[in-house]
Amino acid sequence: EPEVTQTPSHQVTQMGQEVILRCVPISNHLYFYWYRQILGQKVEFLVSFYNNEISEKSEIFDDQFSVERPDGSNFTLKIRSTKLEDSAMYFCASSLEGNEQFFGPGTRLTVL
Amino acid sequence: DQQVKQNSPSLSVQEGRISILNCDYTNSMFDYFLWYKKYPAEGPTFLISISSIKDKNEDGRFTVFLNKSAKHLSLHIVPSQPGDSAVYFCAATNTFTSVGTYKYIFGTGTRLKVLA
Image 1 (tube, chains in turn brown, cyan):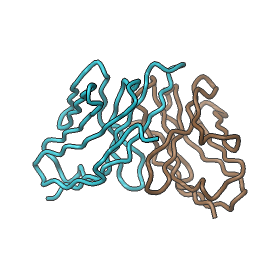
Image 2 (image 1 turned 180 degrees about the vertical axis):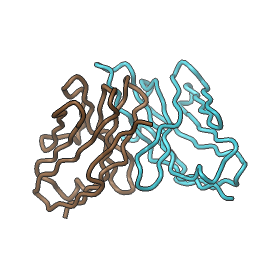
Image 3 (image 1 turned 90 degrees about the horizontal axis):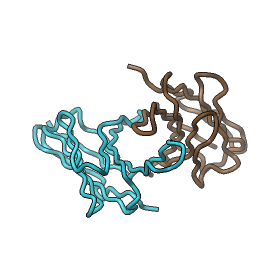
Image 4 (image 1 turned 30 degrees about the vertical axis):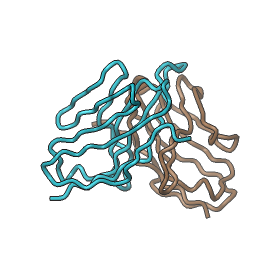
């Protein structure tokens, strides 16, 4: 069964460093998303992406964040200068149509 | 911003009995609702969904009920099995947004434990 994959599973970085979280969505999906879950809190929407551009972004998704689909398979989330409060699980999701998003296993980001 | 609430952080049920997980929402613009299951160290897994034009949707042991007037939905699992033990999230979205990408608003989750 096709699935969304994410790498790395755990990323540790120093505050102020740039990180890139990578995702490979399901191959025939057209819509891509990033969510995050801070420990003990709810899963929060960050950004949606369709047709090579951002469709919608939340207030969390400020200028420090960017997304890219550099080739036909990868979908990346870049955080330019990480802050302590960026520590969270980051989930990538994809969908064929708008609904029923399929989530990856997540990347745990730890900012020291 | 508590647009989607799951007021029970945890629930324990005996194997074979019914599990009922509840979710309330405040935004009347939501018209599509989903339930996801999440195991530790994994991403959310889609379970079942319901459109606001329906009041019930069933898939095997899982049934979702939607009460639009009360802004309430529930997930019934019958019969409950030990493998159902996980955190269950409800999510809601408005499908009438532009370009067809749907932002999910998640509840805080309910941890279900099915006792053997």
